[in-house]
Image 1 (cartoon, helix red, strand yellow):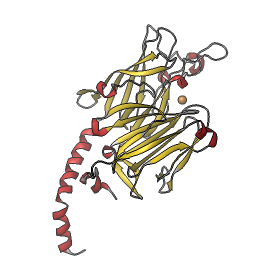
Image 2 (cartoon, protein in one colour; image 1 turned 135 degrees about the horizontal axis):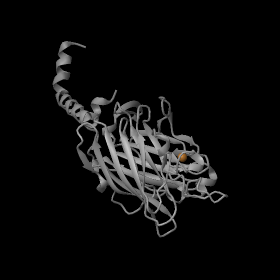
Image 3 (tube, helix red, strand yellow; image 1 turned 180 degrees about the horizontal axis):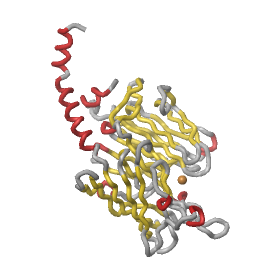
Image 4 (cartoon, protein in one colour; image 1 turned 30 degrees about the horizontal axis):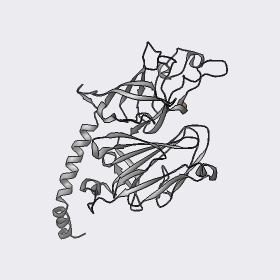
Length: 339
Ligand SMILES: [Cu+2]
């Protein structure tokens, strides 16, 4: 490259330089670890389903002790799947579970995050230490640690409300609605994505939406988090239509509950097989497994379980990319990070 070209680039990319400086600032603010102080109720719904709901959600900065109340991000009317917790590697999570049903002993048992045995969310018969569930009169606090190496999207669910053949609460009643997920973003703030057919690292803060799709035995349950609306959480119900602005960056967090294998497929959309540069458009997902990918939303598609019997049962939904009046949502910060 000649010197002339270098100077030309320096001039024309000046605005990107500013954007990078701003983005570094943002990253620095974001990098303070947080304590997630969550009060979560367990509530019976009118249709025999039971759900987790956020009563209060405070983010406490572990360095300067400042707090942010994000409870209002969770105002919604469909409580299944349960509220998604979004954390960074290095954060701590403290969930006080409040049994609002007047009966039973629900819990939260998580995958992915670290915890001590007292936060396993199981009963003494199983964990040999203590009963870890919320009675109608006594809330129970679970402590999780999003320590090094926990980055990913993980399910959490009840593990104590179900009764086994001996009448003991050894199993969860997650299939009635007590399931949700925790997304732990990596400490380096970057995730793999497929953008315009090219394997790319994108900044987590450039993700516009997270879709959470729970693969149940015969149905998908979905929710989304819209970061262009301050991180607003919306439950989308069964086999939901997922919508994204054209050219926005979206992450799919596929989680599985239930006992069966499902082959998740999308027509018209490819993504990276996790940890590789291989482009795929279907993936076999076993019980309690997860599958996460990030793409640029640029074409409508259908997502479905491609096994015939599940497809016949209606396990499918649409991914709709909305026209945003020709205005690209790709921003200079993001462009600068494309490698
Ligand atoms: Cu589990």
